[in-house]
Length: 205
Image (cartoon, rainbow, N blue to C red; front, side, top):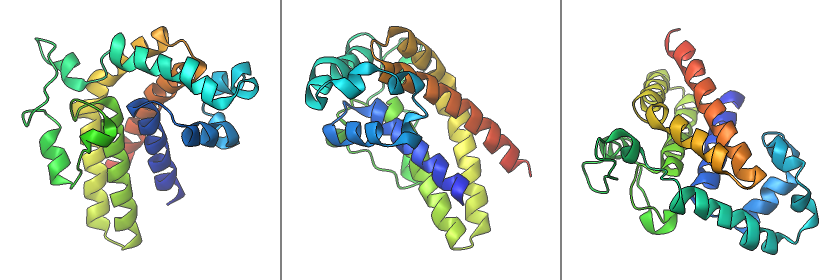
């Protein structure tokens, strides 16, 4: 149970960091939680994190880096990487639409401020959603639902995130100007690869 919750928490955290600019609340959460900072070793040692006023840090350094990595120079959408014409599919033909719908996952485009449902932050949020459903099924003793949700997580990673996110994350790590996004890129890549190994072992039991 603890492992399920830990996985859900990590997917939720990574989704939040990669989906949109940080706000003060999220920055304070990361800054003041040693367990989270342990996942971000370069950020943990970054002098500006402790020495600079938080709003100024966000406005002048952290959030401009997010804009650079997610809007100006890199494109964090699956279909950009998987379509031959490198066009982002914004409509119902997007490859993630059906699976989102099947598991009652709704994308709030206004809140997320994305143009398509295959943004890396939303795909990570969907994994978080599936894990919450798995936790609920486990608590209810529904072994069939738990098994199905493990299969869906494994399938989604292999058919979607692992097909394209490594390319984006490697580019993100190379382009990052702040320790936060450097570490976030590295952590996300390592985590989705290790989580896939975990899921492969779980479904083969």
